Image 1: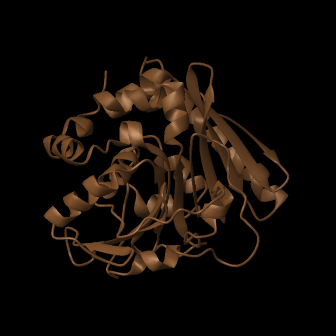
Image 2: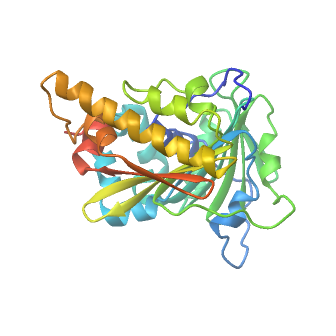
Image 3: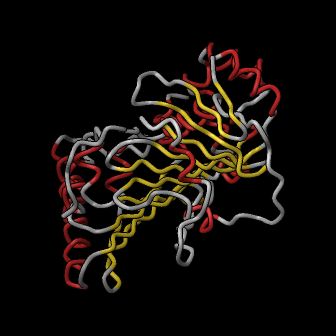
Amino acid sequence: MCDTAEVRFRPQPWQLILLIAAICCLSVGGMVWYHSGTLTLPALLKRMPSGNALVIWIDFAGLRRTGFLQLLAGAKASEDLEYQRFVRSTRFDYMHDLDGALAAFPRDGGAYFLVQGRFDWMGLRTYVGEQSGQCVNSLCRVAGSGPERRISFMPLRRDLMAMAVSPDAYAVEGLAAAHSGPNPPAPEGLVWLTFPGSLPRSAWNLPDGVSPFARIVENAPKVTLAFVPEGDRLAARLEILCRTEKEAADVATQLTSTTQLLRNMIERENQKPNPADFSGVLTAGAFHSEGARALGNWPIERAFVQNLLGTQ
């Protein structure tokens, strides 16, 4: 089992998207690098701290194409006056200007980002200057909300910025070069996250009904949850890497039993699962095992996303 020490940085569902946008508000490079070629997602993963960390990918371009990103336009956070002033000052808006964001939140603290998009460099530089930021060559630093949240950032190329939030004011330098070894595989999906199974119970304030599922996976070395388009809705696809085939079969059985128990509890209350909240999503789950992997699938209706974001 992974260590269950307290996690200093505790992102909540979908707030991560807004967090990335907020950090981009402070992003500016003293110099923009024009590198040829395309950096693939596996190549970006090689730069990130991944051991014992929550790693998240958000395909903003894909969410924009499928119409799901537009749901964020009605979220309360997007109506924040400070954010609107920032957009007017810098002409930067994550709704239109971000294409992808890779984030890592190590268990021992800090947050690391690789963000792809289109940036008005002069506007961003002016904004950071107004926030008392400082750039030396290509590395810039801005004070965060506390001494443990110092923001450092630097351009890796014209459309790619590296950022870090850490007590170390130069933490972003760890993203400047890729780690040795082959490129790690990248899950498929518009949004995906990977983490050690012990992380959810120790790090997140989980919604009602989710905690029993978190307890089942807490011994798994790695859990991947990917959100993929499925017609007019999304599907959440779960992959739990277990140590043995028997463990994988047992996990799939436990997930199935827990789902059925949740259905029974709702029926005893003379209620029906609602596709617009967690009761509808969790009770629709289906699970099986393949080798040492336990696999699951939950259909997610657009109404659930709207309800989660408060846009209905």
